[in-house]
Amino acid sequence: MTMTSDKASPNNLASPNKRSLRPPAPQSDSATTRWLLIMILALVGAMQLSRIVQVQSSTGDSPLLSANDRSRWCTIAALAVNGSYEIDDILEIRDPQTRRRNWYTIDLVQHRGADGRQHFYSSKPPLLPTLYSGIYWGLRSLTGATLMGEPFVVVRTMLALVNLLPLMLFWWLWLRWLENEQLGVWTTLTLACFLVFGTYLTTFVNTLNNHLPAAIAVGISLWCLHKIAIQGERRWLWFCLCGLTTSFGAANELPALSWVAAAGAMLLFVDWRKTLLGYAPALLPVAIAFFATNFAAHGELVPAYGHRSLGPRIGTLAIEASPNLLELELSQVRQELSTLELPCSSSAVLRKARRPEVFELWDPLTQVRLGLKRDEAGSAIGVYEWDDWYDYPGSYWTNDRKQGVDRGEPNQAKYVFHSLLGHHGIFSLTPFWLLAVGGFLAICRIRPEVGFFKNYQLLLAGAIVATSLVSIGFYLTRPLEDRNYGGVSSGFRWAFWLIPLWFWLAVAQLRTISTPSKRMLVIGLLAISVFSASFAWRNPWTSPWIMQLGQYCGWWSY
Image 1 (spheres, one colour):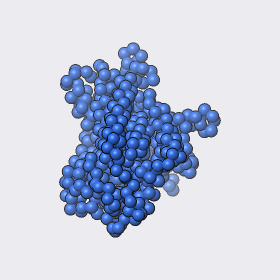
Image 2 (tube, rainbow, N blue to C red):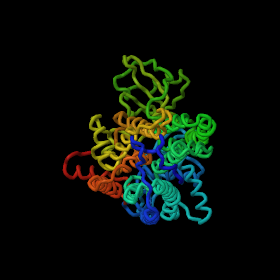
Image 3 (spheres, rainbow, N blue to C red):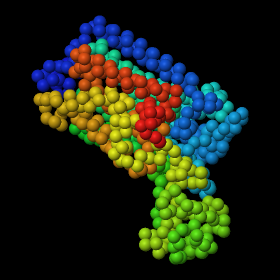
Image 4 (cartoon, rainbow, N blue to C red):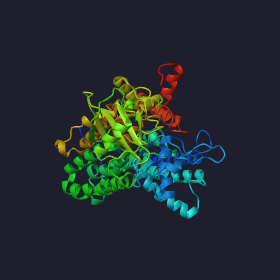
């Protein structure tokens, strides 16, 4: 990647007296840095490949590490075996020796399929598994290996193809960028070590997940933005690639829609014509694919995670509302439903739903599910379409079945603290991100000789900070059932897609650090970050080390 000159400009990180913070590096230092970066990349590639070829569950009879990744693998297997997104049959497959259901997952939803029957589906958006199923089809065609017959071979090969190779490309792009920034040997190597060893992208290489592809897509979009705004390369290709990658990031992480908006807004200041004719249209292919695969899977455009409550009200039962709806006479209910043209057989049963004061009327003959709820006045019973796909017999997502952090943190302030500075803390587990905060402040202190809207360095930093606040704020203000730190995970995984953005800010801070004492402090932050990221290398779907330590010491209990 070719950088602009070191002359003072509004888009370079120049100090107020216009001297560059990026002195030219000696040729010998550049050659040394290049070879060291190549060695680091080769080393981390070998280490990650070693992790992948050893991946297996705690019982040793499956290469699937958690309910989260099993949910996506179930979709891939169902598409390959049945050509359908329905995973009922996949869930019931048992190991011939242990008789365990190695494919079973709690990340499920249930609703009526196209055949009018109730079916189980993965709760994960189907776009990513659909893409991966195409790769699996190619692998199966070339080798004859199948997920059911040779799961270890197929899963490990797939993880190398869909996780490690894209991540190696991402690392290579950013290491090349660091090299061309001429930051000096120490700064470049420190940043390189953090990039490949100190973030949770490294941790999640050996499991199928949405966070890794989202972060890679966002990282490539930022790389394009840097080339367009900072380096001044206004080619149509970069605008189109930026749009394609930002939209793919959002397809895998819903809050990344904020980055789509922030990147688009910034590009309007750079070149509004190419933004409208290049960036904006490039958003459409991924958006169309996202909704098309969701419609193919569920028969509608709203993703599965949008179905967690009662549906629209479709009528009222003209019978006296009992305090306990389980005491209703079903014959009366059936008669009233017939007047609403809602047929109900004598096989129908009532059960208490997971939502307070909501009851489900389930008819196994017609496979129809309806919601019943007393009005606030208590004098009538409303009838609703059933739209809580997470509520079904045996569902894990009920208050009496959820365990540990999945129960949610009742104290909002405590949840915010532990998400930022506590046992799942973004800054406590990865304190290197403190340098990202410093980097933003360093950029704000620059006084260029151009107007605010031409100061693209500051605009890009502002876009990153605004995106971060919107995204983190979204998760910190969720209701109780969503305040679970991302479930059992080695870090606050909902923030992983922001890693490339924060890394770009951290570079700005590292440029200014040159004294031995400050460098020792940076090494300390790096060491803690690397320890946190590597602590769960065997299985990323485990609690963070701070949480495990606190539980051992009795500081908290879940």
